[in-house]
Each structure stands twice: as structure tokens, then as C-alpha cells.
Length: 241
Image (cartoon, rainbow, N blue to C red):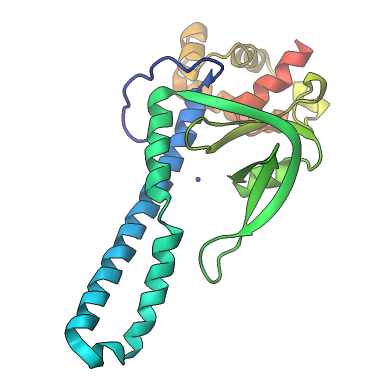
């Protein structure tokens, strides 16, 4: 799952009981929107091709129904069916980006595989938490431990997966090594601000750094902590103060 599209209007207040999208999660939603936009265009192209083919077959009479192009009808129908929900997901994801709200679910992590659309497409990783199914990137699928309690953050309307963290007794995600705490003073300062929920711009302003420099420190932090996003880094920091 490219960065979020251009500038969006400032999100309104989050609904009661829902958290707010972080800056990184807004970028994740942006990538999701881009993917659903591509799927929507592909679905429209398949529908247009199906209509054009059907009209040509009708106008050609018997010759139109006797050629090999007839095989294109079920193929185009299949793609129209597979991509029919993409515009709905796109509209919901745009609503998520405007509202800036996320929901959470926690429970035992179950892992599954499903077939992607296409004849030779690889299997996709699916994370099942308390009955909810999330299609996740392969690195996330490999990193989440099966049959362990985890907390997942997802977009409130579209249900798009955003991030995960371990939630057993407030512990950080499994796999975080103790060597993760071999941090420089600046890295500890940034980790402390991440745990307080500060955005990259807020961290840059407090520490008199550029946002690009902060993002560079974030990448080094994630590598040392063995995590993939700021939510997991904050979960790692809070239990240990």
C-alpha cells in the first residue's frame, strides 16, 4: 500500500470514543486512497470494455457471437465484479481522511492467507482480530505473532489497517530487543516526544530541527527498536517510562 494526495482540509473533531489519525497514519490512508483510485479506474475500464464489446456483438449479429472475442465477456464480467467495491472503499477512505478519526480493536491475533485477484497473483496476508479481517502488507503479516493479544488501529469508515501493537499487560510489541535502548541522547528526546503523541513538525519545533531531520531520526529509532511505525515505538517507550 505513494504518499497522501496534496493538501487536505483540516479534519474536524473526531467522533466520541475515537482517536485521531497521526501524521504517519494520514500518509497510510493516502496510499490506500491511491490504490483504491487505481482499482476504481480499472473497474470503470473493464465496464466500458464490456459495454463496448456487447454493443459490437449485437451489431455484428451471428458473426459477433461466433468469434473468440466472446470469451472476453466472462473475463470482463469477472473483473467488474472483483473491482465493484473499489469506488465505495475510495469514498469511505476519503471520509476517513477528512474526519481524521480511527478506531481500535484488540484480541488474539489469527493469521490467514487469501488469493489476490488474478490467475498468478500471490497470496495476500490477512490479520484476524476479534472477528475483524485486515489485509496487511507482507512485512506486517510476518511480524505479528499468532495467538498473542495485539491492538490494531484502523480507519473508522473504510476499515483500512493502520498499525498494530502488543497489548499484553501493557507490554510493547513482541520482538522488541533490550538492545533497543542503546539510544543516543537525541534519539531518547525524540522517543519521549513520540510517546507524548507529538507530530514530526511539533518535534522539529521543540528541538529546533527540520522535519526532514526528525524523519531521519525516526527511521533510525524504528530500526533500533525493531518496529515499523511511531505507534509501536510509543508503545515500546511508555511501559519503561
